[in-house]
Length: 164
Image (tube, rainbow, N blue to C red; front, side):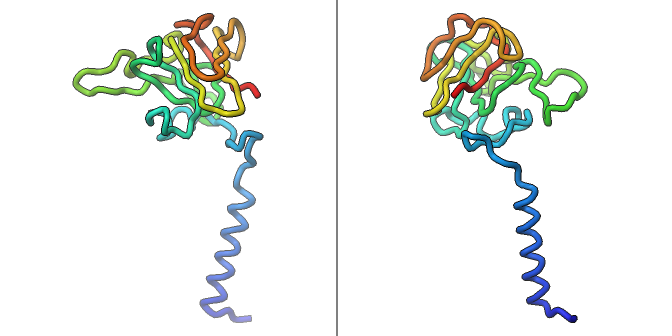
């Protein structure tokens, strides 16, 4: 059977669509894809103005939502080591505050988030954001329903998780 050019194009398009459907990962209950570490590290959402970011949780270097910040979209097991793909790699891969102010950097610019957060905001309509003292979602916790200065984890924060 000889296929004309149009038939070949249609078959290629159908095959590509089927491959995309099979390879697309399932979404979690909140409509977000599972975290591989990559999203929290490299997404363009991390340093957008918090009100315009698709990521709904923001940690701030100083109290009262001041100075450097970072938007986070997915739970983080350990702020000091957010690994790409979840697989072990050489060295630690910490989450850091976004760098703002080239000639006069904002306080906290480029610093590690772990043990350096003073306040947080949560713009998610269905989930509470929990900031934990220890890695692995353990220890004292500050629950952030909207926005607040951290209390139990003020400059002693190691992980973060969404809670429904």
